Image 1 (cartoon, rainbow, N blue to C red):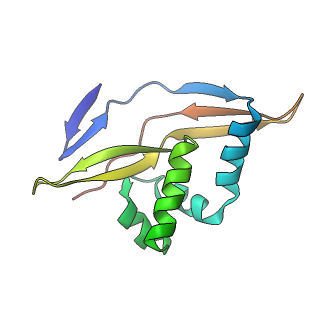
Image 2 (image 1 turned 90 degrees about the horizontal axis):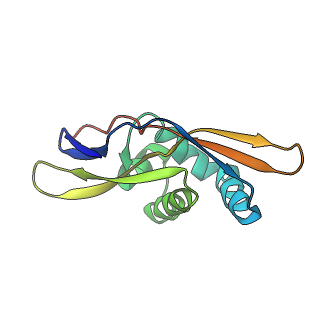
Image 3 (image 1 turned 90 degrees about the vertical axis):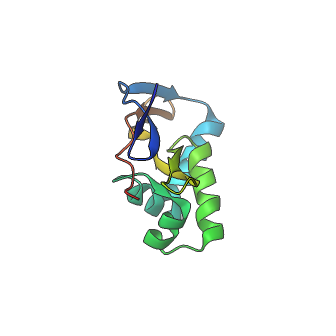
Length: 126
């Protein structure tokens, strides 16, 4: 369910859900994103509020091509969530927020990841 808040459409907060991942390819994708320092900087920046790619470039001091590539990597890994920011002038832009509240690694009996999906942080102000 979506709601309009301050010029943005955001999903209504939902209960946290857990997803267990034991597929080696998915684990490799997630771990690859987490070991990348630029990806970690983006995750840290997006932990407070939803940000556009250009805002992430500025905050993380990244070239735009790098920021877009890392945002795509994090979105495909399920760590970032994309939403649309509507501006008062009628334009819109994509913004990104954390899609995961918690990530747990279990090494007993093989590698297994458990992701807890949580509500997105508040949207950025115009």
